[in-house]
Length: 208
Image 1 (spheres, rainbow, N blue to C red):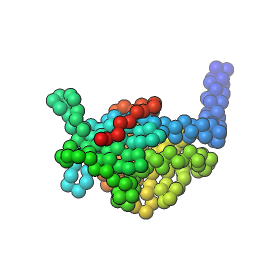
Image 2: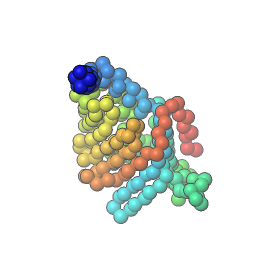
Image 3: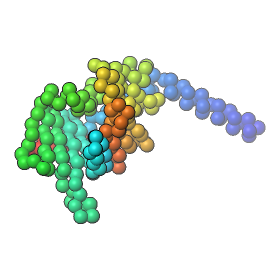
């Protein structure tokens, strides 16, 4: 009798899990919650950049709110204390760059960089996916302006493909987002290993 009850419970739980995976409303709520996380967050971790013979591994921080994005790459002092910015980028309607090796601030328009670096505005593009939730829930995928966004069964964004550029962004999760990889022609250009990610209202200071 106990064995029959155990089998019945296993079958019941499995059936409920299958129904949940195919429940459009449950998936829409998952998607909505996951997209909400992209609107305001802070990431801290390590960034690895590989380009031709150039290789870099530094501490990294990124902050985003609905109005702006800021990313900082840090040198570290003795024993990793008092990190100082190696490179800082701030973007709202303009792009502000500060390089440790240069004096002053470089200010650019997105149009000046977007042709060579189409992924610069990817966070803004993710924000616009809110308007396409029904299609994403149905297909686990959507293509907007030659950029394909792919989601897993948990409605987490796992891949972004630039169809005309042979560029991909891969996202890995261990409970929360844990790694971001930027690939071009199957070569890893950037790896971001996330040590900590928080989702809350983030204040961002513009470079000046």
